[in-house]
Length: 370
Image 1 (cartoon, rainbow, N blue to C red):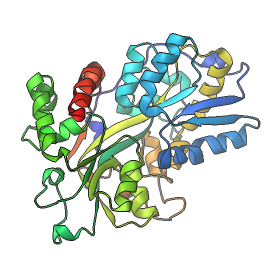
Image 2 (cartoon, helix red, strand yellow):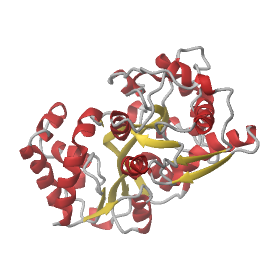
Image 3 (cartoon, rainbow, N blue to C red):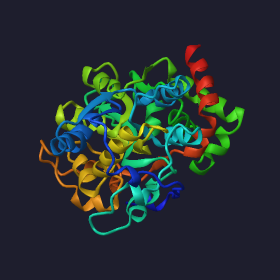
């Protein structure tokens, strides 16, 4: 993938897992994810076949991944961590790792080699972004728009900055109720070069510049907090354009046949994967490690791409991606990592967001409340 040549790798420090492989394993797991089409793809590709192969194992899902950091902090302080495996984006995994709330692992010990014989670290490559993060997919946040807006007089959005153009593309927008991505998009459309984004955001003036740009569309924006919101708002005609995870947009376009199209310009790539809460009891950890080795092998990651348009994190999985499990359509053109879809793209600066998330979030929420 073109993307994977542009990023830096992480390293693993502490071995964990193999000693528990033959110990008693818990018979149930609580997995934390995001709900919707993405969680369904995990169920189809990972948990359903795993439970079929491991009689008596049960899985409970919690859809709280957007609150993973705060909830794991609270559980840790209370001494009662009830989650066994947590799906998070890259920046949140960095914060959990830095705070000692996620377990550091040895990737070669915990994860399976590639089906093509490749070593784990070579196969996952740059998606191994820190010592705690177990990669699953490469996804993007991008924009979907209605294709039947009469007020647009036949015009079609082709640029990210069309989101900020209320004259040519009037109507309600939807943006996530978080600063990440929104701030970068605002600065790009206010003339800041891609390579300067985080230098600008590092300053109080740069943060205010990005918020001032967002001010230009604030009154026409619905702020979403659930990944299901924008696709539903688009399908209902309550908005004309909105940001969403590309897999959610794929669902509303291809599975629901809604009059919606994708705007890939300046999509923001991110990595999504598992973290294991630190200090799990031995029986729960043994079960989790057994599941993780299974769920992140070459075939399972390729299987997930049959249910959702997210690119598998392993290079060895790429050739196994074929058609959608139900629709029968080729999935490659719908992947964010398809070269045709990534002429302009961003990758979140994970370390910057890990260092600045709390302060920037507070300023962003104060701005929203005005």
